[in-house]
Amino acid sequence: MSKLMSKIKVLIPGLIYSLGVATPAHLLGKKFPIAGGAVIAILMGMAINIFYKPEGSLAPGIKFTSKIVLQAAVVLLGFGLNLSVVVQIGVSSLPIIVTTISSSLLIAYVMQKVLKVDKQIATLIGVGTSICGGSAVAATAPVIDADDEKVAQSISVIFFFNVLAALIFPSFGGWIGIPHVNGEAFGIFAATAVNDTSSVTATASTWDTLYNLGSQTLDHAVTVKLTRTLFIIPITVVLAFMRGRKGTEGKGSAKKEKFNLKKAVPVFIWLFVLASLITTIVEAVSLPYVTEVFDFFKSTSKFFIVMAMAAIGLNTDVVKLIKTGGKPILLGFSCWVVVTAVGLLMMKLMGVF
Figure: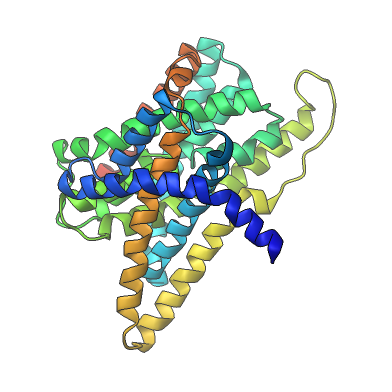
């Protein structure tokens, strides 16, 4: 018990710091829905980082907020989703998911050859852009034996375009005529054109706020996004198999990497499914007063998202991001544009909008 309390005490300074940024961002998001609390929180965090980098006692709590609090937010969203709807939405979006993933990996391969970018960085950016950002990079890096510097550079590039997506996609979606009667179309767009879960939720939340849709867009986006996340499994299996065949790059070794299911599919995804299953059962038997509880969970989830965005912004060094190099950024931009264009094309062909 004492060890647990000690761990909690270590997290408190960073949690309070993140909360201090998230609270005004949340309030400003209500006042300026065109931006939304999640995006404002990212920008505030990044601005603060320029003048004061949260190190020392603040670091553990901020890291916890950007990872665990965000995952908790996604789990809580599950209490607003009926599992039968989850299956229906996820399966119907599979053609879009498969084509966007394939397109991103293909353009990453081509641009790596053209720009002569490091193969491991190109692989991490391609996988991260096509599937789920940082989680995909974290799952892929051990399989291809990428070092911390390459991982950091890849995540920086991916996160840069995540921030751009969260900022411009809600306005862009309205400009190209994505319907806003409900959140289905934009939810699918956000979940397939934006890679990292945090930015998907930020983008979808902004659309919900902008058109007073409650959490319709967020529900669709998270469901499709988590379906997309499951593609980490076949991608990392293929990469592990290829590396086992070729050996460790640059060392001539034939060492094979074991596929780790726990690393490939984060626990919070299974918890999200469990929460959705509970929702499905509860709605089937029509239990009284439970709807109010689930509404509270969804409201809490939205604030947790803002809080996580604040922490991610606080951890982002804008100057370092710019200095990571032009070629990886150009490769990431190419993947991002292709995924967006292919996703919209598939949505048109499938009659989503």
